[in-house]
Structure formats: C-alpha cells, structure tokens
Image (spheres, rainbow, N blue to C red):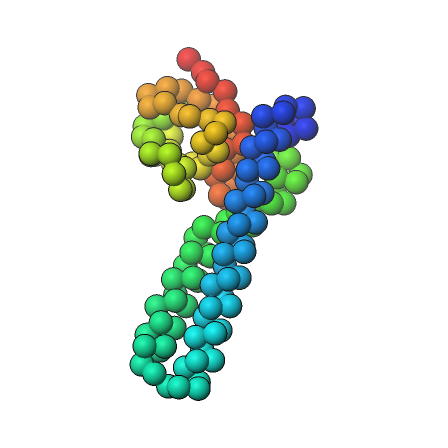
Length: 142
C-alpha cells in the first residue's frame, strides 16, 4: 500500500530499519560494557567500578525502554503496512539532528530529515507508525 508503490517511502523505511539496527547494536555494546565492568568489580572491588555500574544500568535501561523499544514494537506495523493517519499544524520543529522530531498539534513525531523538512505553521497529513510516531509518509494540506 504505502511502502511498495512509492520509491521515497521505501527509502524512509530503510532509514527507519537502519536506525533500529544501529540502536540495537548500541544497546548490545552497552550491555557488554556493563558485564565487563561487573567482572572487573568482582576481581578488584574498586569503588569506581561500582559507581559506573550504578550509573550505566539505569541509563542503558532508560535509553532502551524510551527510545529503542518503541521502534522495535513498530517493526510489526511497518512489515504489515499498518499506519495511523493524522492531520494537523506544525507548532515547532527542532534543529536537524538526533532525534529529528517536530511537534504537530501538541504531539511529538520523528521523521527522516533527508526526505521531510516540516515547516512551522504549515498543515500536513501524516502517515506514521503508532508506537514510535515515526513519519513514513506525509502530504501538505491547506
């Protein structure tokens, strides 16, 4: 439906899958580092290792839960081409860079900055993934 027939939309989905893949690799790397620090703490019992563990575990858990997990949940919607549709006015855009987001009628959405550059006070019809609110397709409306 929305993914197969439009070249730009397929490219946006590749961007989405790529970011999910990179985030998952980052989480595994962080878990590996936490395990390494745990082993060092068991050997040497230095206070700095304990402090690192206390800081890293909640930080990595929070990043995974708030950023990566919603995108992982959206993979099933992306594969089944199930999108939500919403039309509204852009209230605020953030400088391009991670996490590439904007506010539309009080709701925060993420987007691919190479394919979509929302302009404040313009109206758009968005087709987006439900959990992460990643915009797959858009139409400018009046």
